[in-house]
Image 1 (tube, rainbow, N blue to C red):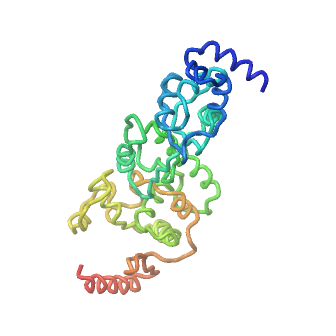
Image 2 (cartoon, helix red, strand yellow):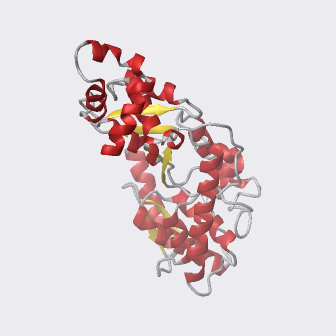
Image 3 (cartoon, rainbow, N blue to C red):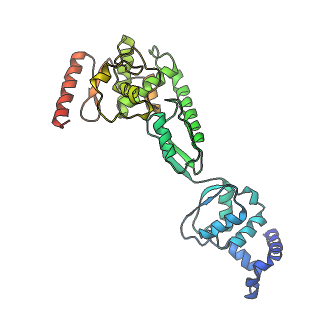
Length: 333
């Protein structure tokens, strides 16, 4: 404390013109400065401030004073200089606790513990749709190209203001690669998918077929069983992807002519898997494909509750389809 007081004395002498009012009022300039530094701050609630990259101490101090986070921009600048931490001030968005004094404010601004904002990427979106979400988010900066389909991990990401879209895309790609690398070695034996890429393609179909978490292993089992038997997957979402590509949504029912049309993605017309994923699957769908439920089911159809009815035989499946059509008729579809 004695050493700090001595350094404060030197600053008071150096900046005596700034504190002359305190002296004229009859008080000690040093006591005045110490009070301004160590008294609780003026803010009555947590204050959020944004420090731009490359901002000078003068600009930072002015912003803090404008936000009512420090009692004096001039004295805060002097204190930063006294502390020798001016070069440690880091750009970013910070939350300053209520009533924080200048040392506490300086600790926050040199900690690098910036405010993080959650950005949630839903499972089953295409890469084009995900890039669209990022482009619409004002927290992020820069431009980014649409990455290959299926390479992004849907998740909630905590990002700091000003993070580049390219950096976030790179993280999503790294996370997706890490998930596959972790799950692939623990896959069920004798699966008909022969590579992690094939698993990713099938996982994207599972992701688009059901939004019910507990159904994913069953849906995966149906497709695995069909591949083993050499049956076509007959997945509607693959037809849609063949029509609209990365735009994701068709916006209308699939036409019979589209079911009959042969495209690289129409699994009613092609054997095996389509050439690429049709969306970005989440961890649960990838895990479901690599360790599907123990089931002999070969068919499934909507059951009217948001889930699906599964069947092992075509006869049972046709009954489920008839039941679903009756539900649709009752609902006026």
